[in-house]
Amino acid sequence: MKKTIQLLLLATAFFAFTANAKEKTIQLEDNSSILGKWKLTAEAPAKHKAKTPLSITWDFKKGGVLNTKATDARNRTGAMDINVKYSIEDGAIQKQFKPGIEKYETCRVTDQDQKSMILHCKFLYYFMERI
Image 1 (spheres, one colour):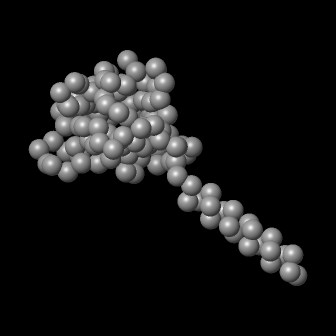
Image 2 (tube, rainbow, N blue to C red; image 1 turned 180 degrees about the vertical axis):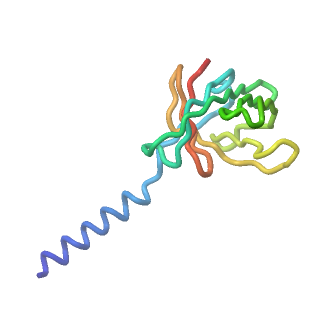
């Protein structure tokens, strides 16, 4: 009985530790590694969950402007072309939530190489490919 309780405590401690483990992020020193055009290919609520396909282009520009271009897949609203502000703070991207509103969301780079990048924003992961 004593061994069973010890095993249960050990298992509980293990699961508590893994549930609270921080996700690996890549600390950005500046915007040099994200500058340019990126195609958002998918989004998901978690990195390893089912992905929803997207067709959106983000263009990170030098002056702290992020240009977003998207088309409605169902042709209800046509094309969208907006600019929002962004900056790099504490190793993460601070992206304006909506144009004209000074509310920002934090997006952290979790994976990146020369051709692809995964961003973890507040509620979603964005899977991107460099254009």
